[in-house]
Image 1: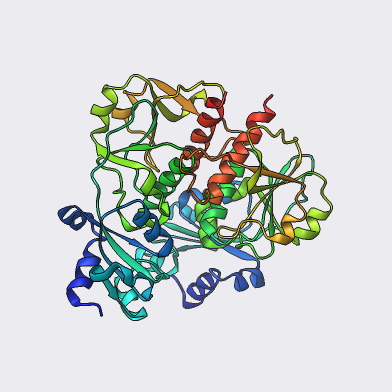
Image 2: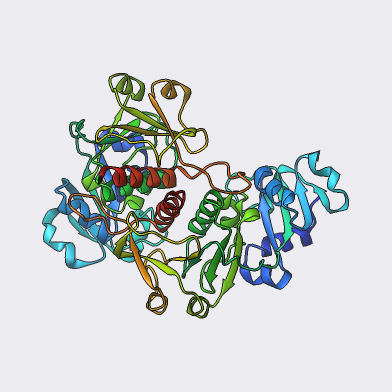
Length: 242
Length: 242
């Protein structure tokens, strides 16, 4: 049975402030929860309508469907809610390509980008401090467990880029991503949904990349940032395969 | 001032049944409405908190912010709501690449794919009858006006594919999209968010394409269908540019 305190505690974790006060986040649904368990995230508590999670012992609470609805942030709650410790970010691997995110707002977009990095084997994402938090419940759900294989670090992006030599940014103008040979290592910066890369960060980007537009009337204003990231990561991997 | 009848009529258009009974759809916000106006969609009525739309004469209704909220489907209503006639689909251009959509459910994904086709100059999207309706308000908003330059046709996808010679499908296995030379014309099929391409349609696809996965542990289950479409359209254009 769910206690009032549990309900309150779990619901509070949908707010960034409480997540970082307690260093905890919530994952939901068998698939996503399983991914975090397999990746050895530290489990704090697990609540489920199914007894298959009973093996977790004292941290397990059996709940009813009604109780699940109370603590779930999903439209269609799915059997299990788990609370994990937020891990410390790992050290960045500068020998590999790093994706940098400047002021990204939409949790669904960040989740999709974590999934893309997982697909294309990009191990590190660095995010400006004003980007959406990667432990936001919507980011967790849209990344579908890929957090377990992608290391996210929040930092002062301007300071970080100052120390980098190979920095690439995505803009409406620049060299075609199809022509440019990106190196094995380096940082690719993508920007905010509405405003793109901020002027402060733009000044620190050494190479401007663009995705050529083929529409006859050339009226499409922009590509969605997650789609642009998909195309650029795919193109980098294609070029690297030699 | 907004009448009860107007409110009822406009709200009814968020349902597919009423849209097709009346052959009408709703667009919102200055940017999206402007795109449909410029593309000569037939305007039926326009309601706005701003007098800048007064030049439309008898079809214009000045409304308050409160009234705008009543008829808007957006979280943040944005000044103008317009009702347009649903146009007849144009004839398909078989000399060009066609995107086919099999059972797509999510309106945001279809909207993003319309925007992608606009960017990459793909003029025709054909959709299976069970795909989400392209005049769904969420599709209209996420396509951001790209409907005006992309022709959408709903049809019996299996029957359609039977008459096509060059049909490509996106799967978890198949030839790498980086290697395969797709022709100038042909049909590229993408599937449903959860289940991919249906078995019936799969049997009608002559060439299987896949996006290579680079994640070390190879655990990412799949790419989001809009991201996969972005990568494939980009790759087709890159290969075609010679």
